[in-house]
Image (cartoon, rainbow, N blue to C red; front, side):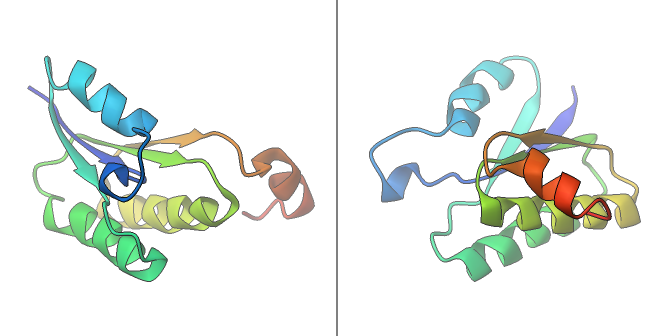
Length: 110
C-alpha cells in the first residue's frame, strides 16, 4: 500500500466547511495510507507543520500532494516542493485559484 502525504489547509475545526483534501481523504484512505497536514490556523505555524510532516515522514512517503488555493498558499507549495525535491520525494502540485497563471507569467522563475 502506498503512503501519501496530502499537504493543504485542514481547517475544518476552525470553520464550518470541509476542504477538498478532507473530502478526498475519505475516498483515498480506502486504498492507500494517507496523512493530512496541516490543521494549524496561524500561517507560520502551518508552514512549519507542513515542512515537519514532510521531513519526519520522508523515509516512508511514496508521494506528496500539495494542494494550493490562495495567493499565500502558492508560496507554501513552492517551499514544500523544493523540500520534496531535496529529499527526493515525488510530489504532485494541485493548483486551484490564487491567480497562479498570472503570477507565473509575471515571474517565470517561480
